[in-house]
Image 1 (cartoon, helix red, strand yellow):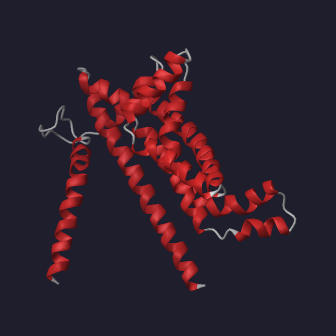
Image 2 (image 1 turned 45 degrees about the vertical axis):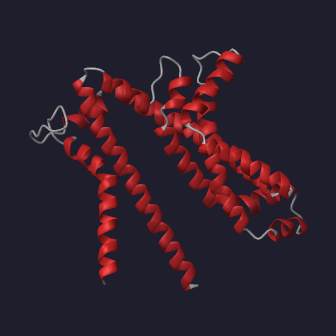
Length: 267
């Protein structure tokens, strides 16, 4: 009993440490305060500004559009890479796994600066295009898709693919009807992870984005350095909205997974 109480207290402390800053922002987003520490009356003006300010709306839609494009491309590339590595010889598979782990542990600032040097300086690519930004974020997101899909392949019965070939499927049909169906949960997980990484990215976007384009991360950093109080406080509302959307998505995903596990157990 005592151990259980101690464990519960430690869990509460850890969760409080993780979520207290976000909860503070959420509370202040519903007030008229212009800075943290000032307690003023209830107001929804921050949320009105968030959804009516043209600059903020443009930045939010542009950031989510970029995240969707990068996530789709990263999911395709990461899935094909995982399938190729899984069906390769063992020594090649180990080499692919090692190459995939390097971008995961590498600092984002190094990746962003490297992409900038390679594409813009070395190859002379125009920085006013979105190509360096998309490629840079794909370099960030694709390894995580690879890591999400590969475990699903390892859990799959390798004889299913061979059985599909024996039953008359072409390699392409067997890949589509057997392999892709088995790794679909990993692809969805990798896609969602890629979206979160793209939305959170700052360093790669800073080095590779066009001068006329801002993501949420780069805009937040620049806005906090300026004197636009209305924009700063609207960003509190933006942080709250993003946190709530992610929390709801995680809860729904967990409930759906629990219901599916229950149905499989009843069978």
